[in-house]
Each structure stands twice: as C-alpha cells, then as structure tokens.
Length: 380
Image (cartoon, rainbow, N blue to C red; front, side, top):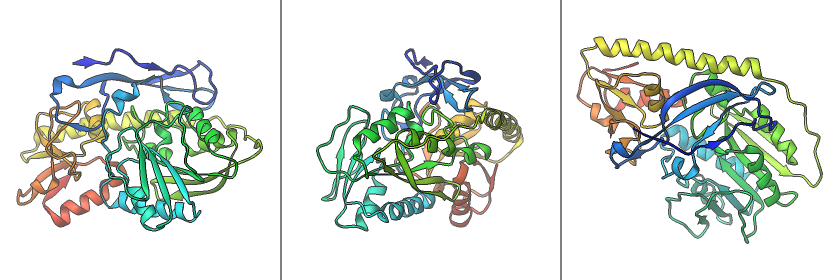
C-alpha cells in the first residue's frame, strides 16, 4: 500500500483561526481519489482522514488535507441521473432570473449548468474556471484551465460569479469567499448552490464529509462568512434536501456581522451518530453477505462505496460495482479491486442482492432497477 507522505496541515479553525481543534475520528488508510481509473491498484495512494472539531463554534473539519493535484488528479463527476439533471435545470433558472450578461463559473464540472443556462439565454456569455475541463467550448461558453484563488485574473467583463457544489471543497472558505469579494465590483452578484450538509449528515449520507468535502460548514456558518466579506444575501432558497441556493450582492460598505452561536454539542452528536450508525450497519450487511446464497453487488463507484469499505464492508463476495455513469463503466474504483459495470447486467439474473447506500439518489436508482432492469432485486 502506498501512503501519502506530504499532507497540507490545517491545525487551526477555519472560522476563528485558533489552534484548538479537538480530535474526533481518524479513518486509517482512506483512498485519496474518489474516481475510477485504468491504472494498476498498486499505484493507488492512501492517507489518514483525520477529523477534528472547533470547540468554540462546532465546525467539524479535516486537520490534514490532500494536495490538490493529487485529490483532483482527473475529472470524476459527471452529474448523471434525473436528480442531477433536474437540479441543473432548476439552478440554471434560478441564475437566469437575475438576468446576468456575463458569468464566471468556478469549477464547472462537466459543463451541464453552463449548457443549460446559455441555451435559455442566447445573449449570455459564460466562462468556466476549472482545473480539469472536459467539455467542448461553444460560442457562448469558454473555459480557463485553472484553480480560482486570490491570484486569479481575468480581463473580461463579469457581472456574476457562479459556482455549484464548490464551497465545501475549499481548503480555506474565508480566503475563497474573500478572493471572490476582491474579484467582483460592488453590485456584482455571487450566485451559488451549497449542499445541505446538516441534513445529509443527520441522514447518515456518506457523501457529506470526505477528503473533498473537508468541513461541516453548514449554511448557518456560510451566512456568517458572506457577511464578513461584505456580501449582502438577497435571496436564500432551500432546494429539496439537496442544496441551499444563494444570491448575494457585493456591497460597497461593511456589513454587520452576526454573532455566532456555538454548535459544538449538536454537531459533535450528529457526527458521532454518523460513525456509530455505519459501524452497526456494515456489521449487519456483512452478516447478510455471509449467509446469502444469491449474488451480491454494490451500487456506486464513488465515495459511497469507499466509505463502506473503510467501515469494514467485506468485499470477497461482491461480484462488481454498479454505476449508471458510462465514464466509470469498465474501470476500477480507485482504492479497491472492484470493477464497474452498468446495472443493466442484472437483467435476467433473477434474485440478486444489491447493497445501495447512495444518499439522496437511493430512490431513483432503486426505481430504475426494479422497473426497467430486474424486479427480483433485493436491496440492502
């Protein structure tokens, strides 16, 4: 096993700057990448995922970070499936109601949001700043291969900065929002979507916190950071159990920064509940794996599965991973020996078991498999 030797230390609170973090939990030897690869397993890199909590605010955060070039070594998010498609359509509509003329999007992923938003507004100019762009430019959509930070410069006109599911990836959210504040002129809009991390972690979703989502920075704290950097919240909308949608405006004067309520007791309890739930749940699944006479598959070639393995899920009877993303099929999930197939391989196989722990996507995955592929599947 190859282990990461050089971490980025983050011993201080992302909110207060104090070096007083309390250790919560360490996942030993966790894969540093959540995508699927064609490379040998011997090349995979592992690192300790160490969680701490700020006793003054309750913010939970990683204290040791993976270097960005290793963590984001290639693009692995394509946002497939009806939940993501509907989200992009609705968020594009949310953005367009502010009638921007020129948008700078930070971290555009596979470009779905840009394509939908520009298709609905033929006059909209859209530039994406993305370290691993993998989509074609158009007359309206241009790309810049880079990370956005305080050193980023751009000569074009921008009246709105947009990002979707990015802030939770920032290693220093204060610096990230501060860099946007310096980039935008007063009156410029910041429009973004941020996951409902509190709901996700309460619901025991494994995509809430990981090497990429490096902090339990809930919307309560996001509101505080926006005020600190002179962004006036013009609208905040709760989008299902998926995200919070924000429209903020760069102010031309300092704003009143609210006092922070300490969330230490409640957030520590949520995190500890997440750990104990998965320890018990994986023990139960392992018992089922041991006694079943039917084939066993695991859905989700992503962080969902890597977390289950970290909690001790037995792999010897799992035939393969299932995933709807064509970009993952035929490849191996990093950090494992398991390869990825389409759920369509379950057709005509009769009774089989599928381990499904994919958070908010469970219902759509289950419905598709039962109605369109194999009605005899039992989900664990």
